[in-house]
Image (cartoon, one colour):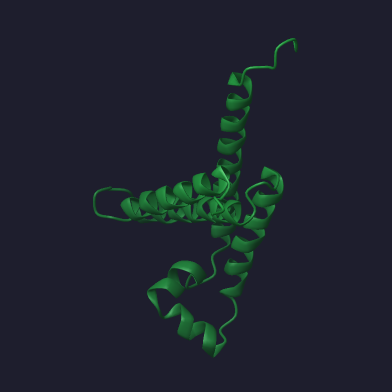
Length: 141
């Protein structure tokens, strides 16, 4: 039986954890101003998209996965300017609203960019730390 690459499993866990954090952020447990919750939620959504791209392409470079995720996020935001009947029907569902959004907001593009950047920095930092901790083969300086 074929095992998925370890990286793929890690990305699934990161995506699920990010979703949980986003749900917690929007729960009544946090007394944050609505605009702060909204923009943090958008940033977390973009980070989750980065992790989902990682599930699909776990061995792709961080920069390429990040650009793909950012392109996806911006495309979804731009699609909110389109009001085709089938899109409106999809946005009328909970899943559709979570994935496709409901109204264009240029500020969301900044939040998505920051969320993707935060995910890329976090992953790069973790990878560099792990690389420094790995023992070198005998005889290699």
